[in-house]
Length: 208
Image (cartoon, rainbow, N blue to C red):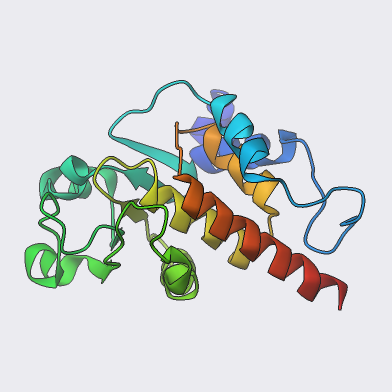
């Protein structure tokens, strides 16, 4: 038995495992779909309002997966302290985001998504590539991923929710509940609608 266990100290991994097990279980894709229909945009907004009332510059919303703002992403020393190894910039090319392969160098793997925080922007075009980047990163031992935009509320949150649905097999409702417990997020209505469409698509695939 290690000294930490002898002293009753709970490791970070154990804390996360306990939290995830304590979460109310909701049906997975294709399971009881008729009984739990896809939430509407209005219902999603109500779920989001019921979550954490505030957020810091960066929050861990899933083991080793962080959502943050541009100020955090632009601070290489802060990223080093957090142990960030991968950065997904959902506002690539934006005025406030300095990030890029040249900015981070070889110590951080980078993916830029040139999304605009507008309801009519098709962010769903980047769901698969963003989810694949996050999934491959988190499959690497010791890796930590920061997904950010300017404020860390809409674009970055949307891509993280899509990742949880595509790679962790969470329903949209469960993904929202999971993230909201750790950070205040609020994707715009257009993004929420696109997440609803993804939820419906995955449910249909699960039933086929």
